[in-house]
Length: 216
Image (cartoon, rainbow, N blue to C red; front, side, top):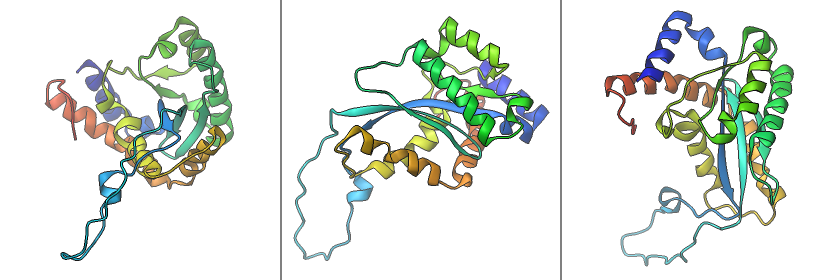
């Protein structure tokens, strides 16, 4: 509730300019093989036609971690974890440095107006080195309550569209997985703007529910 109150208070004071400064960051696993969703596998058929039996497909154990940063105008940076590596504070700091360059190149004036970074409380994000780097950039962070994917725009918005895109796809190599970068870049700005706008609605619902989980 404290996070919701702080966010909504700033939004009501600063309005659209507040949303303009928000940069979302989150990680997601991308499997080499992702089965179709139930909705995707639905098909029209005659009432007397035979039901086509489909082989059961499971999500591949081969997968790649993707870190995605975006704002209301589109994707800013997509980083893929190299095989045999883990996302720690050092790796995350390197990614944030790349993000800063991406913002400088893609969002003129945003570094001057001040970035508001919204990411979760994973250890690499909350590590001392990471926090020191963020402060050195002059960025501010929006408080995020632990274990709250319902208040994380990537989880409740962007990654849902991404999972639909991945349904039924097969990637034979790690390089092919990077196709998602092209997909993210091809999405209209309206898709990203809607995700930021929904954040206002989510925090408002959280407050009205006295901090309970917001399912929809």
